[in-house]
Length: 332
Image (cartoon, rainbow, N blue to C red; front, side, top):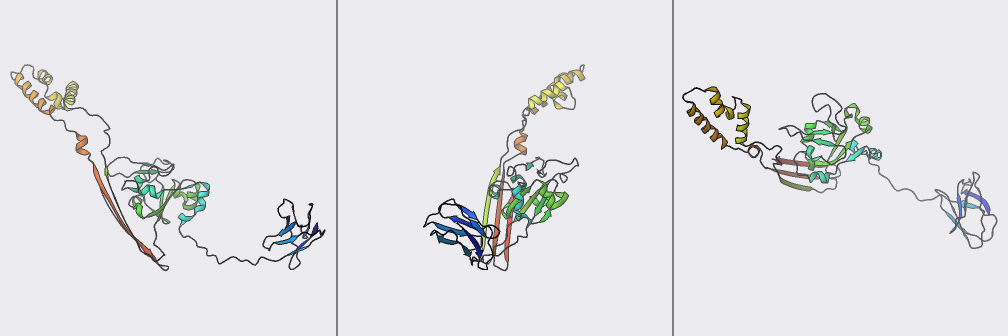
């Protein structure tokens, strides 16, 4: 069976498909709209003709050797479509398709019992290394691509911090409240430099803060976190006072009491003194008093620290405006 396939204006429909329904027999029209279906047809077979943008046509085969088809345009139209552009660069999700962007699980981060967001980032993203130096008042070191510079200071190797499209310092990042953050993304590859330039050579940490609501409702959220920081294990086993005094005696250092008040010292320094026995007895009394002092400086200097973290946020707005207000108090 053969024929011609055209539209209502008589123009040929190249590529239109003619198919016997329920079978794998089919053919397509050439550039002139002509087709030739090479199949064994029997009366009663359903022939379907389809073309993109046209309404399909169905015909019952009745023994014809030639059959032309005319297809009408599909009258269905697309409903109104609204395209919304996101102003925040953090919403460019196309970067994630190449595997250069990793998102921090904010639920897991907020569940960590820590008041410092830098320490809370530990273990959240592969390749993001957070090191706590342990020095009093020092900030944790954050590395994405390791140390690339031998310059003194942390600024030469730390990543670039971006909050809602603006660059912030690492100190400002540490003061952020995790409850106010909607999303954190970590950029580790060339996409970081493509977006932010040479300053992003150490990687980028992008932060998107929470926004107000457009639904006309007011949401009030309060959260409380409490916990304790334990002492941890003893790093070094120290000597007792009697062991320290004995070591000082063996070292024969006159500046230390273990040797200064020992019998060895008096006999070497005052061998012919008539008061030698009295001096030895006096020194022994001093050493006996020192042996009774065994201060545990680990317990004296390090204690269990309690902390509290209170967060209150109000979120609301309408179609014309929105607002998000939050307050956070942390004590340790």
